[in-house]
Image (cartoon, rainbow, N blue to C red; front, side):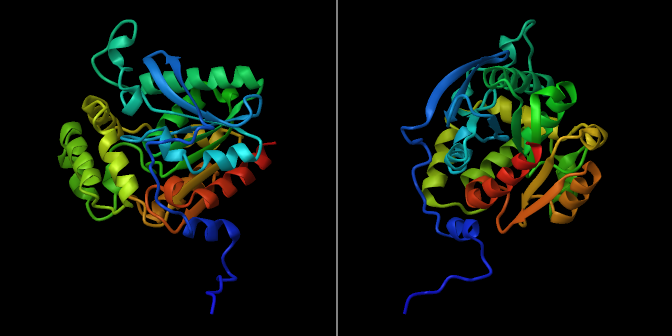
Length: 304
């Protein structure tokens, strides 16, 4: 007898449950890969969809890359949007970008560096489409997206914070179970622990995904990870800026995220954002792409 589908599940959830592992290092041929000249240097970028469509800029977090959105971009492109993602400065195929390329040169990656890079990407995308972009900031990049919104709200049509730290200051203090201990580790130690945990597959991922994230570290500059961890230990308080922003906002998280759902819910309420919780961990873009894309499209419709 054929197994019957749960009638309480929607189609997006059913599609996410049927996801198969694949080679994350190989983006399908329809993706347009290029290099973007950002203030900190060349950023590896991927684009999919009608170049004249409204841009959706998906920004990965610490240790991440554009490939983290590979399952979402075809869905967004299929809905008529121009899906764009890029590797942050110092990360994966953007390893050549860094503070030494700034004028004047700097020694460390900073919030200003990442924010200026994102603003440059948004400016280029908005100019081409003649309309602002929908922005999705994943984890660390959620902070960067908030800082960019504070400086250039005209470049944003909506803002989604995906697994973004919900606490200002030493943001790691709220992490489930080990939060109180994270204040003892500096950026170097914190980065080493983060990289070890990913390579050791402490939070299990399929074999194809694990192979990719391990190989990705061969290019990613350790300094970029160390500096990002240090920056997240001094997260700016963006509550008022985000609360005052009149655009549609969404906080999207997995129910097993690093930070407890109650903290994300409180953060969402404080900035006037909707809250979406998926049956996943810190990476709904990988494990719940259909559900997350469904909710993004609903958010975008509100912006229209």
